[in-house]
Image (cartoon, rainbow, N blue to C red; front, side, top):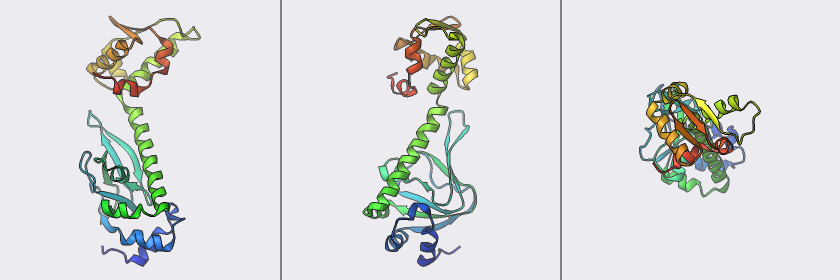
Length: 236
């Protein structure tokens, strides 16, 4: 399918809410500093870890932005449709791509090279659009990774067991959770080795003590306030 003429593409993207405050001149500048490509269903735009160089703006169709988990299952970070960006955060921050986007259907997508994006960032209103989109994407990515990470699932498992055991008791009391590492691993969908690894960190920082077929919560208040990032960042 041939690319749309510049005027036709300007008419299409001027209807995008994200571009509503841009002038006609700026819209022409955006179109002139991009290329429009059409991709068939299941086309891979790039792979996680590869070098950035292009940001993608969906004109029509849709793209699933996914990450592969260690067990080969798939986490869909977001589904980008018309007006949605793919690869923008990485291009803006000059880092490697963080995900693996695939088209869901035949899709028209505007491509912006690093130099084109840099040029367009000279337009203050466009820069604000980009920065908002980058923030929203990174926030979405953080939310999904937190919800599906082993440290977070382990912490939530312990907290739920504490809530069940406390039943209105003073949270300063020590609590004993009866569960093997194998049982916890099955409950949160990970390996026994991963459970042991992160329980050891919780033990090292004084929140729990590992016992035979039990976990003693030494500091319930601290356990309730722990953040999963603390476990990810802990040296091990």
